[in-house]
Length: 358
Image 1 (cartoon, one colour):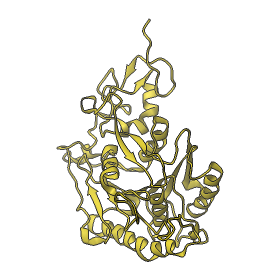
Image 2 (spheres, helix red, strand yellow):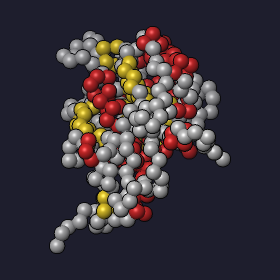
Image 3 (tube, one colour):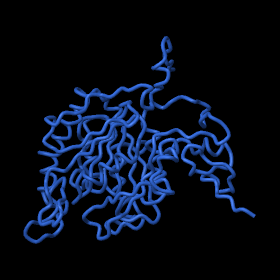
Image 4 (cartoon, one colour):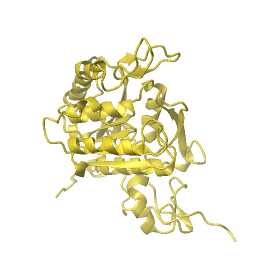
């Protein structure tokens, strides 16, 4: 008797699988459609898989971590097909902006737009509809880890930009950067929220430079604030949330892994009411912050962005690092699927056909 792999949705034995990636197994079209919001982003053609698992490994860590975490990142811009036919789960055979069908790259941001170092990458499918900006953690840098992360996600119709923190971490053997002063230069001890130099650098340098850069992306590149999402890890997550809350823009969304609003800003309020969606992911084995402390910090995020706009996911088995399992990546990819816009590029490329919206 042959053991059939479980359906990724209901876990019952599955006789069919996605014919594009050949990895995700489904017992029925119904389960495939249910899984489509997240799988359409994670799917990649089987012929281009770097490994049997369909993942790309990157090391993303924060200098607070003793043991750097190896991260498995879902990849692929392709839309999966039913194993028994040529139509996708929605019944559409539309090309999702594949190269050659319709290319619409926006003007890339200019280096003079900010004093911060950054790496911009246009959408892999040729249509720059969304922009995701990445902020690394304490002691890291944009290359190679975060640039590879942005590439491996292969988000459809989405350009990415990885920004590097402005200040090097002192006394590190390897190059590492920080968004604000984090260590006492004399004792090496970690600085806390009672150290005024932390928020001083955020208010005088980091936030103004990031505001200037985003305004440049709006004015020069043509990105709408409602199409810009911020993605940060640890200290980078704190900066992403600070920028979304107090930068003066009503951005589309923020994803923060193991990072919360800085404690120094807990009495501050945004100038306008925000509709920005926020996802915060926290590992239940994070050795830097307990679950209780994480939930307490999350309450302030709720007050700033509104309870209806924010969500916190506690990931089982995850420490202070990026997700390293399917259960860890699934909520993140589902959040992307819900908050990234996709144009009907097939209709746009056809003569005398326009898309109708309600």
